[in-house]
Length: 316
Image (cartoon, rainbow, N blue to C red):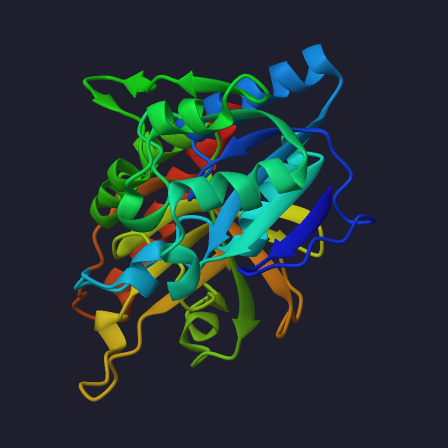
């Protein structure tokens, strides 16, 4: 997949942009099943018209530039992970547009000229609620008017699961609650967080449950505190395990407020400090809790491990 970084104002190089394209438009945080519906619709048009499948996304999140959002922005899929997922979906070209204050001021007319027509786009596909241009004043009806007869426009209706639409907002709420199984349903795959293995306090090793302390990139959405059934990718191999997110209340230092993500990898005994890893999240087992002594903690960890093993055995 070709990845092309664009800014406004941008200078398009003929050797980079080699359409014509069937373009899917959106921020696509999570690349969930609703997003996949949009991308697959653009893919179908690309196959029918012998054009390249392209996706246009934006970085960073518009809220970081536009303001008006009190809480910090956490991504379901950081940009690099989004790139990997889109490549696996068969996207030929990914346009990553730098979202800046100047870009945010573009009129809908200028957006279509610079980021659709000038990129040799022949077909545009987006969700029913996609907006563009200054203050989001352009909707898909405006897109159709501006594209005229030369560029076809397809609007994809919302995808519902249960009583609500599949959306990034819904997934963030489920992650806050630790409802990983429903998140997996909406994504169409396990929720995944990338990270790097760093040194911890090594207390797990002392009680027979050594853990890999995983530091995730800033801005990654971390599920609710607790114990989870997970798999972890180490050097392109996947291993079953269990993960604790929290402040380790059993051994807690009152002055330490650092959240930790610690994975006990089953049947694994290697030094992997500094390795880039990925965690796939499958099920939340319980809240984090304080124990009355080491023996009670060890007994609970053994029970947690047995639950994890049973979960994976049932999937085989």
